[in-house]
Length: 328
Image (cartoon, rainbow, N blue to C red):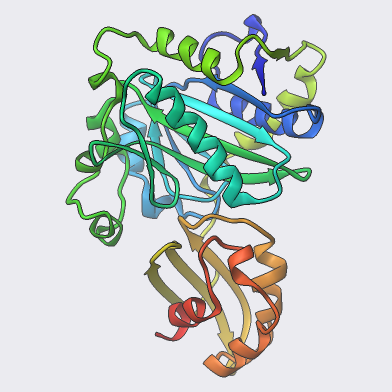
């Protein structure tokens, strides 16, 4: 695996949209090997591709405290990041999403274990130390390549994290905790004599050794164009889907699923999926399109989805689970 070196002209902590653009550029153009890079952000809330911002973020707090809000192209839940976090991006041609999760999260755990921390993999996408989450990951594909970005809490402001995010009570209950702060921990608590810069250098060496590839100034034109798109308010804030019906349920091994349906004369005209689930395939082609103009009944939906493997589209989702969301 090779490490991606960013031009020093970019500065130490560019906007998070720049780092997202680097991921996409590397996925499209650096195809000779697996790649990774390590980065940090200013105080930022990052929501998943399919989340409604108003459900997840305390916008008033973010505006008052200069916390930037961004949306990523991967699924999963909302998270808070600041200069006390260490962000990792992995880019690979591995076609199996589950294998890529295990590979990338295993690499992250190895970095911690090399420092004497007893890190274990848990849940859909977490690294756990002493029963508390210290890192999580999300995944998406670009040009046939997998991108997995991981957030590690090194010395993050947990109070700001708790104030900036507004997870549902159902999500916290599913984790067996009463608040965000109860379920997370900082790695620096276990490494009191190590600075974040020392940790980043240690991680780079464990992951890539001396193998690297540089982003050139010629590459920057395409990267800046992607960055501009990721920073648009239309992308970040999204819109409330038009609907006549709403269904909400938290499914084990899937996450929260909200469905906004436009139903007329007993038929589905359109629908939108919202939640912190992980996207592994074509949601529009494999779930939404087959259901348009179909009867809004358990039997009608089941018949329309025959032959569609939903677990290959949304991680952990089955047809029975989908019917449970819609019809109980």
